[in-house]
Length: 473
Image 1 (cartoon, helix red, strand yellow):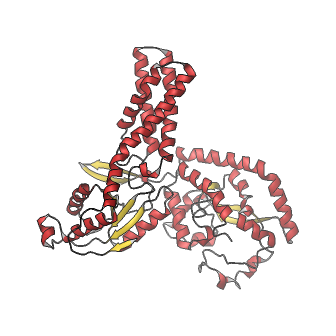
Image 2 (image 1 turned 90 degrees about the horizontal axis):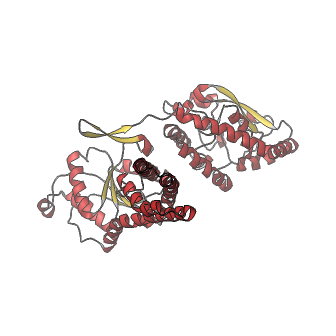
Image 3 (image 1 turned 90 degrees about the vertical axis):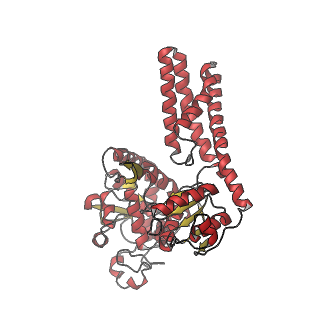
């Protein structure tokens, strides 16, 4: 990744590589239409084979493409909110079928439409998601190449946030430091551009980037951004403005016009109410299912712990849950008796260097069975009983002890607004390898940006993190 300082000069001719990228970007829309038409055609063939009627299959492809077009499914950000756009198109097409049925009441028409549209919607989402990356629109696709424009410190924070993302990541090909806009250079003045703008265009052409991400700062005023958007338009390159908050989920941001001025609205986190009810029910049902299926394994582990070293099978510890309520956390015992009394003499080995988290490599207090249970995370299976009792969730921030809660910052204390979890965002992002502040930041980010989709993503990533034993100890 190149870091480009400001220099003055006229830009060279466009490279063949950047021209090929812009041709590929322009050709993505017809290819996307072809993908959607294929999905609709497969659904139409399925309906025709099932019911041997031709009317709905004959009209499905054009109706489906028009419905998708009405939901802006072929714009520059077609892959953003893909499922939402497809569902909107399906609802619109269903409304059109209902209207046609009202004027021509044929039950087979409405029946076939209600069978064909879900098929078309599912196939469209699937084909769009798994089509080759080169056919995806927008700089957010996995092959997207972006140039970051702005102060070096802000650029580093943005790049780190992009790398932490869980979707298709763009490739940052250069960082261009924003500077003053004074016109310098005869060629730049004649073109109506500053020397800095000329240099930025030169870097855009040299790197063949798909988009420029501009970061907020005093150097990037409204006039400069407006001129930059026109300059980049001539190059076939998108201009995106990064929000001040990098760790905010896209669904929490919305453009809201106020007095004709487009403002970015930041929606409040979903912490309670109806959105959380399905999570509560799902947690308890899955915990009950897990207990029923894993009871034989837990019995074997409990016996192994008892035989491996003197002491009980379970370790109980008071932890702080949602709204600062205390509860007793259950785990399989992984340490010898009296381990807490040795904490002081081993404090100098704590690789976190902080009293808020205590963990050392090759801890002599850990038993033989405990070492395996920790690395495989099997010691946490008894927490399913905490989930079933409503004290914990399957996914959430790490449960803290009193001393850790007392040391939390104001932002860090937001993690107490939700139930702690058996697994969480930092557990699948590096586990014990992560520094203390990064773990707290990830927990707070989870609270602020919670959604059912995020929970599902973390649950699906957890087995892989456990198998890799990344950062476990």
